[in-house]
Length: 226
Image 1 (cartoon, rainbow, N blue to C red):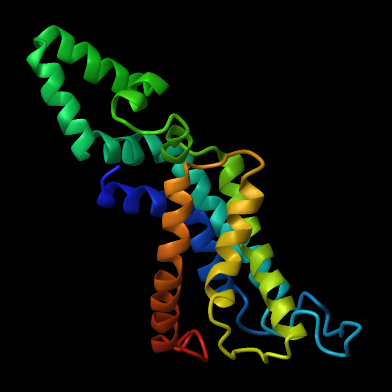
Image 2 (cartoon, helix red, strand yellow):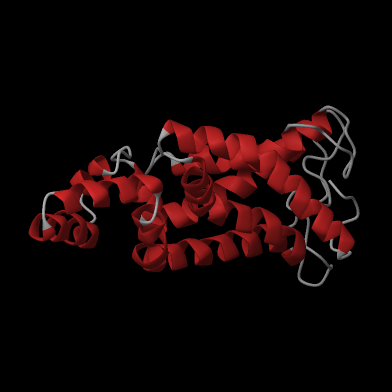
């Protein structure tokens, strides 16, 4: 899989989790009809369970927003996701090969298989068969990704409180990967993506997370730029 296609496909796969993690901050702002998820209580070590930054409205709003994106992907997968592979370098090579076989064979091999999006078609393009679910995601996965993302974020906050790291203080690695790890783990009950998608998501997420937080800080949506 060429690098550009891999990056775009990874972003397409993990987008509901990114949406939930990013918008939970916005939905969680303010006190009206909003309470901390830990209800202000402490753990057995005397420190807060999650902290004031993890709120009921932020959690519900983030999961709902991510699920809506996942549902939109389920509908638009054939419109947006499939062309992503159709216009990749592998697809171009297949097109040239099929064209050499003659117009009839090229038409059958490219157009018919593209419409059906069969596993054979993805195999001809050189992709793992399981990439189809990443291109044409199910609504269930679109719900589990954001739910797992915010659950993973809660686990990260719980760990930070146990390490006596105050809210807003930087925890390299944990801050950037807790939500994506939770998203991948929970959604794996219905879909395990190809290894290259998992590895790429883990590599690029910290950079995307830092850029998004810097933008949120510039827009006064966050108190810290990380």
